[in-house]
Length: 380
Image (cartoon, rainbow, N blue to C red; front, side, top):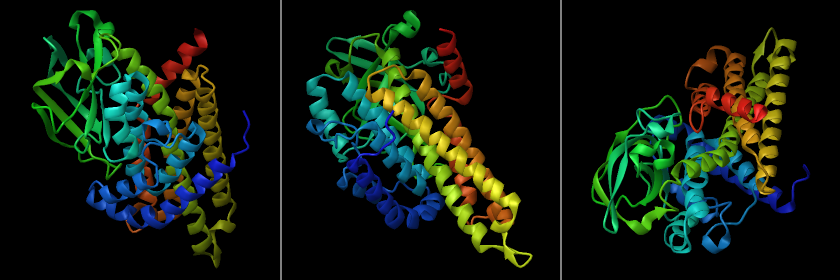
């Protein structure tokens, strides 16, 4: 893998870093406290071409490679973990599902406005009884003429209450287990029976609405099915595999933010008539935080490189997400320790980084599931 960044990669990362410093970071505390969806910032990111970064230009995207996309998402997440989730769920899950598995008409009608950022997407897979065990879902889609009737519900859906397009997974053959799942394009404003039950009050990840959805005899036309009946599980797994690269990016962005704050604080805070950064105990913490963050970044780009080469990257994406998510929590926790008592109060952002980091170890594949995935790849 060539670690030399292209001129375009460097310029885009610098542009997103500047946007993060000037627009996102000054709003991060407010977003965390109000937990309101920052529609104006999302609109600004759309105008900068950030809501469809890896999607080809012919479908409204920016046509960027995965290295550049991951680096840009890292910068966004450095400013706000919630905004990082909004972008990752929108692009890596919703947009990617339609791009990878939609036909030309579906891409033109549904992918293009999402990639342009005029519409937001969501990915409806998880249910109360079907998180890691996807085939255990209860949502069903029954064929009725040239329509499907969908009944059931989804839980933990990022962007679920603000999305114009939701990719929903349902059982079209309840007796076939994992081979009986299919995916559909759902349009909340058009499809009667789509109900937002509410949004979750979460530990962190504020600003990104995590919704509970219900489908009451919701009818959608047959031409909104993605791919063939029974393709849903394979589609979901492939999409989540790519999404793990961007959750690694979110994790690294949060870790970098925690490191930056801890470094600045350690040079400003004085004890025993000197900055605490002079003490070896603090220096060792900072050294470990930086080393772990950079190691996670290398794993992320390794997985991105394989994806771009169209080579298998199942193990590498799992390793990147697993390691980066755990590093994110560890670095954020050490950031609090360096801040001491100030790290435990909301006057400083250190505690927010830890709250935002924890979800990385849970969504899009828990750390336990990812270890299973890595072991399976080693033993296969």
